[in-house]
Image (tube, rainbow, N blue to C red; front, side):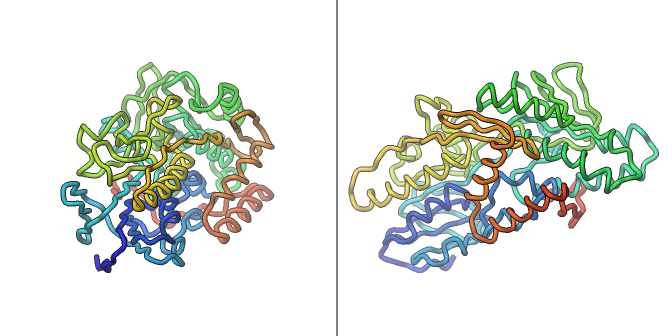
Length: 427
């Protein structure tokens, strides 16, 4: 890997997501050698991936080079690498570009889509966890309408314009709202010779409400917003199979569709070496204590989506969202400095700053600690918060200008099939 030797303790961070970047920022001006490993050379602002999928933003608006984030910090090194295993006995990380020893290891590899063991759904559905996956989905959505123009088969045309989103969490709800707005304001102009009124958008939720982690008021209002946009919300319905053409469920309900977006859950992206049964709990997450130490180790830590840190308020682990990841990264940075100096570490305490979701133009729901509100004001709050947490002045400006343009013109300019996607394509 060509990592220089130094007298400073070496901290290796696996993953350049919210948790990994927050930790690296905390440590990079200290007398430590910080090495960050990631299979991408950029940090992705995942909450806005759905806008890439629906043509609202280009991918470079929500991505930022990792090297640029930490370019002015001494003793910081980045390597583009795929981590293959962790040798816990010899304190080594094994990657596709070589092996690296560590004094302290922090695993912040995040999460991946959870198909709950259903191979057919995994093979035929679309996911939206990364920028490449979002671009694939964007291409497929646009290709479906191009193909719908060409077919003479009415059933095939309906299937091409039928979108099924499995999962009623923030990802599914926000994607459904964006698709509904495309159907209403953009498709009739782009495809005047196609009856786009036949396009259908379905959200299928296995539980009895959408946005389960939010208040009952927010959940109901979000459902009302979706239904007002023409989205079909199906509750207490569990998808059991999808063969590329037909979605079957645990009820008599079926869908003929060319596009299923799986947003029904995630699981920890564990790495060989800490993926054994004694380390992993529900949701394939790694068990950690209040100091983010992996069960059984004092010098190996896990933070972010991967880490299962249980509290009285969250007996199944902290939410797999950006805020817990950022807070864990910052706290662990302080604790590692204390550990190096021989001082006792401080237990992590999650400060819940609330949750929010947008359901299209002028429609959002926000739950704060003391206040819940919905509608236009919530939508502006949602916009401001997302702009604030984007990394880089250029990204904030580009996203802001795009949102203003889209709002005024009721348009989404990034309706581009840059790389055609076929369902047998594997990435």
